[in-house]
Image 1 (cartoon, rainbow, N blue to C red):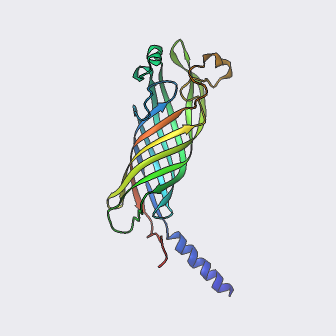
Image 2 (image 1 turned 135 degrees about the vertical axis):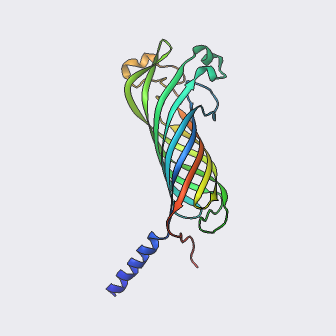
Image 3 (image 1 turned 90 degrees about the vertical axis):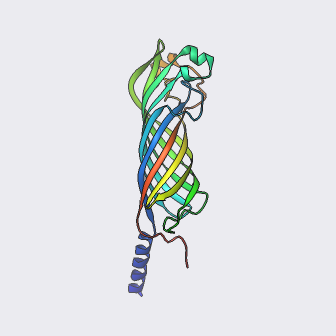
Length: 228
């Protein structure tokens, strides 16, 4: 009996390890800030964004996903439709490095081993954390505090993907990040001695958006999504 149990567990372990499929790839596109500095459009990429991502496809409908994305986040008041911002004429240029993890859910089955050409919309949501430099504005000029902070947030993305060439999957994605921070754009300085330099709406947290393409390569054993 003991040998039978051990053999059964061994078979189940091998079956489980061979029942998944992996994706690894890149993200390329643009970023924009939604905050107290810059334009008021929600989707208006104005700076490059590049990243790496990995997916673990648990079924033909959902995947666990992690990513790291870097962008030189920019915002300019003179691109805004708000006359007050245009008159103020602040500019932001900051480095941002984001780590995120969550679940991707497809609207239809996306069985990568069916042998068919597939295409489906999808949603992604999870948790994120972004490292950024801290700034304040002195006489209208962006001034560094020589410190960095972490902005925790909730990424929410919608996209469309297709297995266009062999094991390669191409996707188009728009992803907004709501953060629990109001320090990314410098309207609330991180240093407590510089609180007199606060401006804008201190009750609204910062958002930023990544818009671009994903290209991933699939590898791994044939997934077992169903029981015959």
